[in-house]
Length: 460
Ligand code: F0G
Image 1 (tube, rainbow, N blue to C red):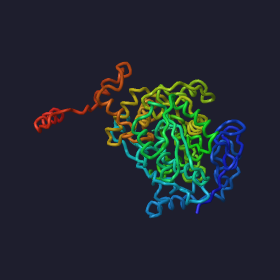
Image 2: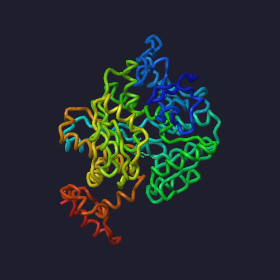
Image 3: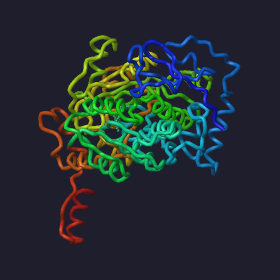
C-alpha cells in the first residue's frame, strides 16, 4: 500500500498548502511562486525554506530501500516494473496505488560514450538515454506521476501547453487512463513526430498562432475557467516522477554518485527535479554527496544563462526564443528559480551553445549508436565548453541526460546530413568537424557494382 503523506510548500514564501487547496494554476495564492512536494516525515531539510525538523528515526533505511528497489526489477507486479513506481517510497503522492497510470516508463539505460570520451578526454562519460521511455522522452516519468494524481482527484480532462514531448506523453497516459486531453502547441514550431503522437493517442490538439510561452498564457486562463487539470511542469507532481532518473543513475553506478550531471534547460523543471532527487538521496543517507548539476541552453533561447551572467540568477528577463532545438525554444521558463537554487546548491554551471555546436554534438551522439533529439545534444556541446573553460575537469565522472529519442525529429537529422540545416555563417570554424560527421544518403541504381564501387571508395 502507498501512504500519502505529502504537503505542498511554496518555494517563494514557504507557505504550506494542503494538496486539496491548490489553485488551478499551481501558483501560490500569496506570492505567485511555484510549489514543491514535501514529505514531513523525512524531507523537511531538503526544501530550501524548510525548518529542518524531521526526526531521523522516521527515515526509511537506506540499505533496505536499495535492496527493495533492486528486487522489484524481478517482480511480475506492473507497479514494480515501472522505473518510476519501483521507487515509490520516495514519491508517496497517491492515496491508492490502484490510481497509478503506467506504461512501464523509466528503467532507461545508462550508456558509456567511448568516442565522445576519447574526444573530450573524459574517461568516465555516460549518457542516460531517456529517449528509451514509452513515448520517446523523459516526460513519461513525470507524466505517470501527475496524471495518476489527476485520476485520483477525479478529473476527466487534462491539458498542457507544449513544445511537443509533454503533449505526446500526456496524450498517451490520458488515453491509457480513459481520460480526455487538450494539447496547446505553437503552430509550425514543433517536430512532426511529436505532433503525430498527440493526434495518434487521441488528444484534442490545438495549434495556436503563437510561441510556447503564448500557449502557456492561454492555458492558464483555460484551466481557470474549466474543470481541467493542468499537467505542465508547474504541476509539482510532475517533478516527483522526474526525480527517478537520478535514482536510477546512482543505482546503475552501484550507488556511486557521479561528479557532474549535465542537463538541457528549457522550462527548467528537469534540472529542478533531478536536483531535488540528489538532495533527497543525500539527506536520507542513500548517497554521501551531491553531483554538480549544470544546465545548458541554446544560445537563442537562453534566459537562464543571461540571468546567471547578469545577476547570478536573482532576476530573469524573458527572451524571444529562437533555436532549431524546438523542444527548448522557451523564453520565459516557469521553474527558473528552482533551477537556480539547484545550480547554486550543487556548484554547477549554466552554459549556452550555438546551433552549429548542437548539430555537431547530435551527430556525435548518433555516431555512438545511441542518437537523441537536438535539445538533448546541448549536453555534449555544453560539456565541451565546460572543459574548454576549465570549469569541468576531465577526471570527473560525467553523466549527460539525453532527454528525447532521435526519431522525435528526423527532419532535423536528415537536413544536417544533407548539409542544408545550417548556414555558412552559423557553421563558422566548425566546418571541418561538421563535414567529417555528415553522412548524406547516396542514391544509386539497383546495381551491385554501383554499391560495391561506393563501398570501395569509403573503405579505401
Ligand atoms: N529536452 C527535451 C527533449 C524536451 O522536450 C524538453 C522540454 C527539455 C529538454 C527541457 O526540459 O523544460 O524541464 O527544462 N520540453 C517541454 C515540452 C517544454 O513541452 O515537451 P525542461
